[in-house]
Structure formats: C-alpha cells, structure tokens
Image 1 (cartoon, rainbow, N blue to C red):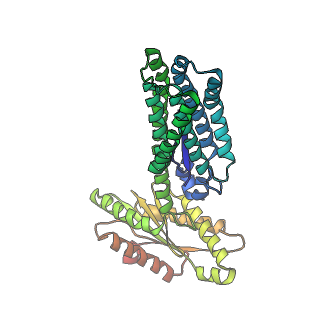
Image 2 (cartoon, helix red, strand yellow; image 1 turned 120 degrees about the vertical axis):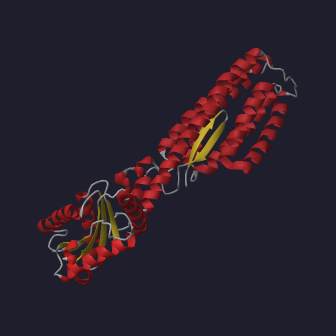
Image 3 (tube, helix red, strand yellow; image 1 turned 90 degrees about the vertical axis):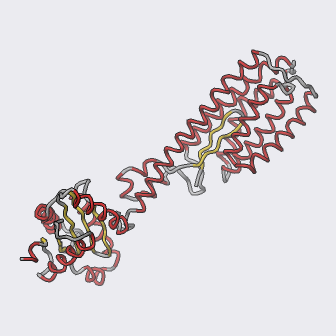
Length: 387
C-alpha cells in the first residue's frame, strides 16, 4: 500500500495511504470498484499526484518556517554570509530538490526516507551553528524525530539520531564549538510560527488519513459483499441480511417478500454458446434486476444462475407484480441479442406461518421449483401452492 507523506520543519511526515473515497460511492461499489480505488496509484505503488502536491506544499512551508526560527540565534552567533546562504538553500531550495528526487526515483519511499535522514543531518549542523540555543534546538529536534518516527518507526528514528549526531559534529567543525543555550524572547517568538504550523499540519493530515481509512474500510466491506461476476450482493451478505430482516419484520408484524429466481435452461446456454456468453447473460440479468428494484431492496446472486431478492414492507402480490414487469422486460428486450432467455420466479410472503429464515427460504425454493414444474417462464406466489 502507498503512503501519504507530509513534510514539515526540516522533515517529512509519512502517513499510511488510503484508497480514494471514490471507491466508496455506490456506483463504484457495483462497477469495477477495485480499478476505481487504485486510480490514484501507479504500478510501482507510487503516491498519487494529489498526495505528492500536498506533501510538496507542506514541506515547503515547514522548511521556510524552520528558516525563520533560526534567524535570531544565527544573527546572535554572527554566522558569516556563507552560513546564511547555506541556511537559505536548506530552507528554500532543499524542499524542491527533495521533491524532485522523490518523484524521479524508481521507488519514492526509500527516496523520501533518505530525505528525512538528510533533514536530520542538516538540522544537526544548524543546531551546532546556533551554539545549541535551547528553544530552537529542542523545537527542531522534536519535530524531526516526530517526522522520522511517523515515516519509518524506530529504525528511521535511530538512523535520524545518528545522522543528526554526525550533523552536529560537522557543524562544530564548520562553525566552531560554542555553548550558548540561553534563548532570548525574540528567539522564542520566531519559533512560534513553526510551533503552531507543524502540529496543526500533522493533526490535519492525521484527521484526513483517519477519515480516508474509514472510507477505505467501508469500500472494502462493500467490495466483500459483492459477487465478482454480477456485482450484485453475494450469498454471504444475503445470509446475514435475511436473518436481520426476518427478525425486524416479524417483530414489527410488517410485510416482506422474498423472491428466488432461476434462469431457465441456463446449462443449455453454456453448452451451446460457451461460458463467456453465460457470464454475459448473468451480468445483464443482474443489471436488469438492480435497475428494477428500490434502494431498500436487497438483490443477490444466490448461486450459479439463481438470484434472490428481499423486498421489505412489500406483500407477495406486490412483489409478484414487480417480477411480472421484469419478466415482460426481458421478453421485450432480450438480455443478449439473438438469444431468448427466460426465468422462473418463486414469491413467498412473510407470514406468521413462515417459521424462520430457513423455513422462509425453503418455501421460496419450493415455490420456485413448482414454477418450473408448471412450465417455467412464470411468476408463482406461495399461496398458489396451498391452493
């Protein structure tokens, strides 16, 4: 899985990437949701351009504010002009160079982690350059270690600590060993923008990531409920839903109808025209069912060429009327040009005599079987059997 990178004060905040929220839309969950979900990622798992742009912007802001936080102690230490030039390069040019490296690397994750290590090394140099001035040194160090912990956990923290120590030694060699930990009021004030921006940026990215992770989880849940061929609900979800619906409707003494449907002579379609044609028939029939039903109805591929529909608050006669419309539709508009396919429909209602979900399903199955015995291509209501 990819990752969201947020770059802050001389560091990069790395957060788990999430599948695009488009995958949670109803349309996406019923038509190639996985392809839609992955549209923001390339084959190498690189981050989407959307996340890269956000990362680039936040890193640039964080480094600029890091530059500001060092101005007062750098001035107090009388750092020469070339030290200011190096700090300006790190604060205003390095984010662009780091972004350029990461976007052109075969795998951007190691490149971004190396960027974090470079940030630690640079931070160590500037901590030495300001004579270990307490407040800016602590602010920079805490944010850099926060970034490396989020980006790579303890291993990257350890690497960052080593890089920062090396940077401190390099800074002492370049600027001299000076111990000046006292921080002036002005030095504290210039740290405030970074203190406010960085936690807020990390919090915002965490908030967005958690929200998108929730949407991803819901998208995966919906995907797990779908039949891979018809994109109707699958049998596992159907078994859960029918238990819930039976209990709810039965307790409230309201009406509900369960319909079992079987495509007539489907084996003949596979034998004569091939399984690809059979798959197309199942897909087209699933589309017709989905289009004809209400949003509250549960439409499922029950198995093979069998389908099941649960219609809450609907009596068997009303359900039979809807099935008659579907039957007429596939007669007037064949599922596949040049191929006449019919279906049989068994419609039992929910009554005090239904017994339970298993008995209710059994009654629907018996009704469907009876419809086939009577010649197929018909809608049969359970009461017709009793008669």
